[in-house]
Image (cartoon, rainbow, N blue to C red; front, side, top):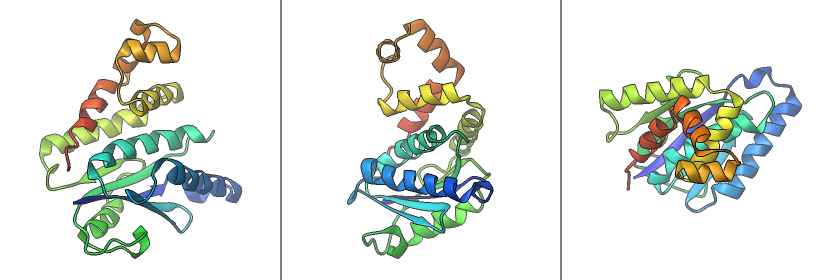
Length: 201
């Protein structure tokens, strides 16, 4: 089993050409520095859509949420993207998504068209329960409401693999109570549990 993420930049047609280039260049650099082959393969299509192949599917949800948050932080216009993450099997995996084939690629691509702008949709036989679907809707709703400072805190929390609140307080130079209150306000522990539900092997 592998995981395939197909994503589309939100409102890319409204960006100035130079800003779209900045965004895609940032994505290319991010993929090269953080999502390296052969475990993760990447490609950018048509300037505003990209695809990632995770050979280790248990990393996919964590990396998907982290990428979504970091992309929003990277630009003053708060760049968001719509994401369709699918788990399944591939018939052919080459050195890039653009020449790989199989049901998981089809599912990921087709479901992108069904996904609400700016949301994350996950498709997997393991994660098909109504409870999981409802939880995903709640997570998407929560992510949509975050302020920039909340995105920054959640990014740090996820990037550091969900440290204890007192450790995060030391990292950010504030009190444990302040961190606990802020994390509680953004539902960070719910997001932590959600990511840890991803038990694909």
